[in-house]
Length: 137
Image (tube, rainbow, N blue to C red):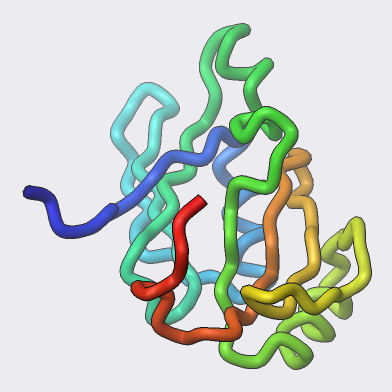
């Protein structure tokens, strides 16, 4: 049985613009390898994170149409923090567009933000650091 999600792809229109945005808000570029033909293998992640994001430059009409809508309009990316207020303020200062003010939920402190392509993310500090015992819906 597999033991972890290593990475997932995030469709973007341009590698360099996506890399600039994410490193600008504090993500690390873990790899940027030219694969030829305009294709690159670009892995990013928050510092210390195990799961990484593979920036995937959209090719073709279908992939371009999915940029910013991979979650079907829902929040589908969750950026976990150990200090919500610090990271919220830092992201605001870097121009991140939050669509809501922070709120407290039973599972933690959260605010919804969008990346430049429209993907909806939660910045979240979970109430329970180890969520292995939380109820499933």
